[in-house]
Image 1 (cartoon, helix red, strand yellow):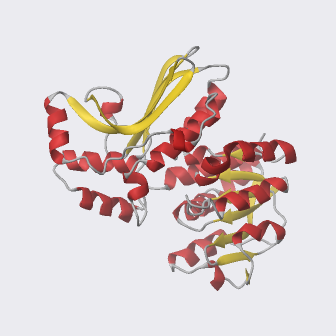
Image 2: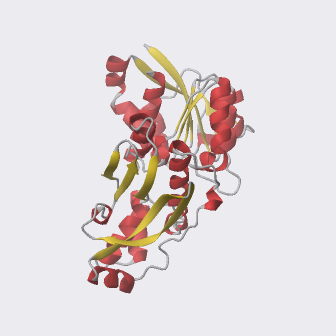
Length: 341
């Protein structure tokens, strides 16, 4: 049995989901893969806690059900920041799922840097470190020998990054279209069905799919960040996140959707990448697409992508994801692929 000493950054819905899946599949993981993920460190916005013998999965899950914070754990270390957790625990794997801070990138960015510099492997569910420092983090991974995986950052359980990097080797992307944010797709669907934007947002928040401040989704920035990660992971795109013009769905009204429907179209928030004269043109914006097209039939909580490459021609895939379970499963998928290499 190989023990994987693991640190969890963030104890929100994604990492609680990780704990729930690990608990439910502990015996299967042990029998089929001879692995045991031992949670030796946890952190949230209140601080860090360390247990070299490993936290009990069930106890951490129940702890969070009571809406408690890490500073209330008996093994809490006062005065130690999340970014400094790597100096207080021996581990091999860091799972980073803290709230994304688009102003500083921290704590996710700094704790990811620290873990990679120690030779740890890192699984990211938080997109922000990649948006701030995609190339730097990959360089640290190569330099110090740890792995860096991040399929959970793009469309949760839909294996977009895995398919691009693993299954389309040697292929060059020609163009890409995608619905990368299920919350906005659900909101547009509810408006189309006679509901209101406000009710749709409240339901998305209740399910844990949208944050208390839904503007990150609604204004299109979540979609832009995912498009940026896709392009950096699979193409020669060398630009910045600021190079992607972004328009969200905040100004889409019932009448816009009715007009589109009269033309046999539907409105979707589309991430688009096209190459023109050897330069990538990227955008995120609401677009009319044919209602019976592949992306036109991605409704409600579905996300989907369409892409063309030089070797594999056209590929399309989608998933339905109304809660964070798929993202949590993607985190574990990345972790297991790392340690089973």
